[in-house]
Image 1 (tube, rainbow, N blue to C red):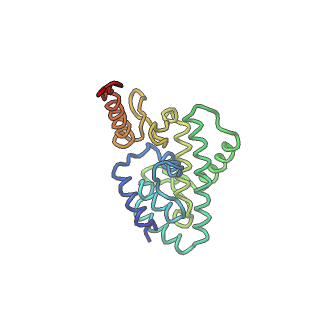
Image 2: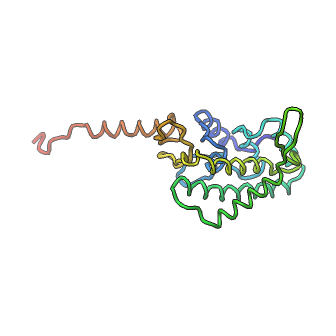
Image 3: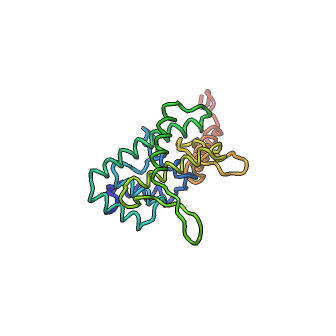
Length: 222
């Protein structure tokens, strides 16, 4: 079963993805699914099926793994509901941490405590193995545990927030979504130059044109 978006939502998603640029990290992509009043349209994560569709769309998981988890979620509805609640709770915690980094303030200890618990939960499911090519990591209960994509997101978040890239997390001047500034001088302002950047420049152009219109004399035609 593919993600149960409505026809309108599918149209919006296709339009969004045509100009979409990854925010630079899966963690940022996750918190940018939070919908705000007057904000940009975002991919809805209203159930586990939609979460899987989103994971597939950002290439967190491949299509084969998507199909396997989708079938598991269809067969074990209650487990899928639990995994979906875990996703939403984790998203809230990750959002608060990313916001604190982007705004240069200390994260609240409550969210740090919750994030540490999330990392512990994810790490338990990741083990080290060995073969003739060397040491590698793999997920336990890869198919059975419907929250495995969430574990991937949690550990990706932990790696990003403790790396030098954390200082490059910014909020778009146009739509307030988070992005990772990978420019050499660190002066990027937009999530996408072709979306928010273009809208800003267009708006500024017409604003300047308006200001340049000649003013009619108050006594013209007298």
